[in-house]
Length: 268
Image 1 (cartoon, rainbow, N blue to C red):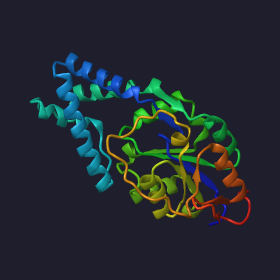
Image 2: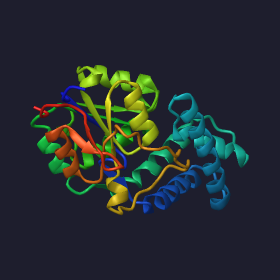
Image 3: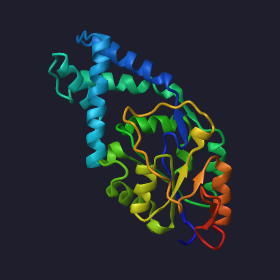
């Protein structure tokens, strides 16, 4: 490929982490609202039903590419416990909002992220494409962490209706940036959603393992990740300096130690 003209990023476990402790608090707040709204469900029974429901809807979303939303998970869990409510019921909306509100204080930028974005923003237009069921929650997190000034475009699967790796998500991202797909570097932590999705859409993927290599505590989706080998021609970075080095040289070393060149001249 030619040197990139723009850089895209995933959000969760790429630029920031959500501490696992957030999940317990989120479930507590959601349950509290349900009780306040006249739905006295048992905590343990609801927790199990909610997890089963979430995994079902997430697996369907993974297969079909269409994004789901937590309101469906709550409605399905309540139905299992004998409460028949529409996913659009305002009581469910209030509970879901409480659930997300618990996560905000537990969101932390990966060390060096703000400095990295500030440096890259001087040379490239930056965009974000993230899988998340609720667009307003993502935008609240981005605002609280002061990321808005760095990004020209922010696309969220919950607003697009489709999630990565569905081609629609990447097509809209490319259109939003106004840069040819082949001139966009896309950085993400998920081999299927970020690496395969970007590659299939014509972008150059970069796999980040900063969270794992930095031993950073991070909440995960209920679904187990799909295992896959890292393609030999896809760069893997373990820290932000390695991304800067890649952009400077256009080359990296594969898992076998062999040199691989993405482009022949410097990034600018």
